Image 1 (cartoon, one colour):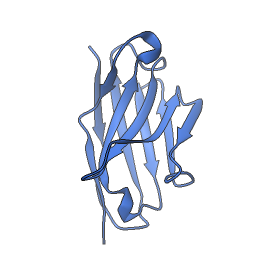
Image 2: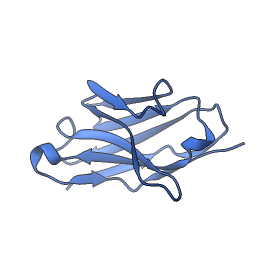
Image 3: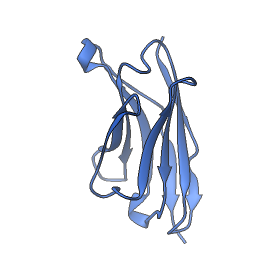
Image 4: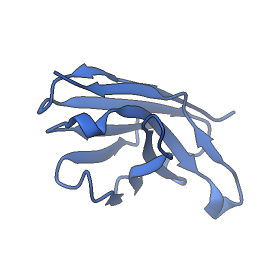
Amino acid sequence: QVQLVESGGGLVQPGGSLRLSCVVSGNIFGRYVMGWYRQAPGRQRELVADTVRGERSTYADSVKGRFLISTDNAKNALYLQMNSLKPEDTAVYYCAADGSRFFDRTYWGQGTQVTVSS
C-alpha cells in the first residue's frame, strides 16, 4: 500500500527557511516522479518542484534559486529545502508520487501548512 507522509511545515518569518520531508511507503520510490505541490487559499494547486530519483529536477520559476528538492533513496524520503521565504510562499504543501509512466495513479500526502508572516 502506497502512503506519503509529510512533515516540517510551520510558521516562519520572511527571509527564513524551512525544510519539508516526505516519507514514502510502498514499492514506488525511485521509479515514480516525486514532487512537491502547493495550494494557497483561493488558488489552484501548482507544481513547486519535482525530481526523478534526485537526478533530474525541475522547479517553478517562482522558487528557482530559493528552493531545493532532494531525495534520500535509502530512506525512501523526499525533501524540500525552502530558503528566502516570502509571504507569497504561504500555502499547504503536498508531496506527490506520479505513477502515470507505469499506468498508475498519482498518490498524495495529507499536506503540511507553511505560513510566511512577520
